Length: 397
Image (cartoon, rainbow, N blue to C red; front, side, top):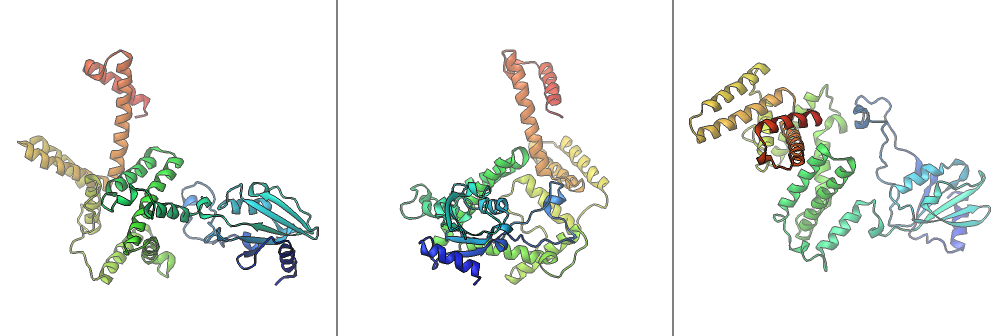
C-alpha cells in the first residue's frame, strides 16, 4: 500500500469517517483514465459517421458501485476537478454529500458533488474524497433503479392493477409504446424519444420480471441472449472475419441466422419464413419483398418494377367487382413496396410521413374553413382545393 494512501486511511479511521470492511478505493488518476480508443479505425463511430461531433467512449463498466461507499484519493497537483465532477455526476446526484480530507493540513470539509468542480487545493496536498453509498431508490441514473421500481409494483404489497396483468394483457400496450417511439423518431425531439424509449424499456423489464417470478427467465437472460446474438452475428467486429462492404455484412448476417436455427434443430423451409404475423401489412409486404429479392427472385432492372406498378394499376381500373378490386388493390400496393426497394426507400416510413403531411394540411384547411364560420361540409369543392393548395405551400410540400 502506498504511504500516501496509508496516511489518508489512518486519518479517516481515527476520525470514524470510513469502514474499511465495505469501502471501495480508487486512485484518482486510474479512476479518471479514459477508455483506450483506436486511432486507425477503418469504420468511423456512429456520431462521426453521421457528422454530429467527436466520439467520446462510454465508461463501461462504470468504475464505482454506487450502493457501496467509495474513497477516491491522490495528489491535488494531478487532479482535474472538473473531469472528476463530470464523471461522478454521470451516476450521482449533484446534491450527493461528500467529505474531502486534505493532508498534511489535516482538514475535513463537507461539500456536495455540485461543489467539487470548484475545489482548490495546494499542489502539495494529498487528498481523499469520501463518497457515502447511494440508496437504490435514489440512484436515478442506474437501470437497476427501474428494475427495483417494477419489482416493487409486481411484488408483495405492489400495485393491484399491475399484479393482475399477464404477458398477453400487456401486448397491446407494448405495441402502442413501440408506435410512439416511431412517432418520436419521425416528428419528435430527442427528449420525446428518450421518454418513449423508456416506456418500451419499462415493458421489457416488466415482462422479464413476470417471467422471472414464474421461473422461466430473467432480465439477465434477456440481456445475455441479445449480447450473445450480436457478438455471433458480427464476427467482423468481435472476431477475425473480414468484410468489404455493407452487402457482405447483410449476407453474413443471414447465413449466421441460419446457423443459429440449425443449432436449435430448426430450419426455414422458405426464404419468406421468419416474418412476424403481427407486422403491419405494409411493413410485412416490404419485408417479404426484400427477402425474395435477396434470395434472387427479382427483376433485372428498375424499369420492370415501374412497369409492374403500371400493370397492377391498369388491372385495378379494369376490375369488374369489389372482390376483384380488393385483390388488385393488394397487388398494386405490393408492387409499390417492391418499387420502394428498388428506389432504396422505406415504404413504411414514406407512408407515415405522407400521413403526417395529410393530417397537417387538412388541419390547416379546417382552420381556413373555420375562419369563414363553416365546417368542411359547408364549403365548395373549389374552395377546398384552393385552401389545400395554400396549406400545401405553407407546410412545405
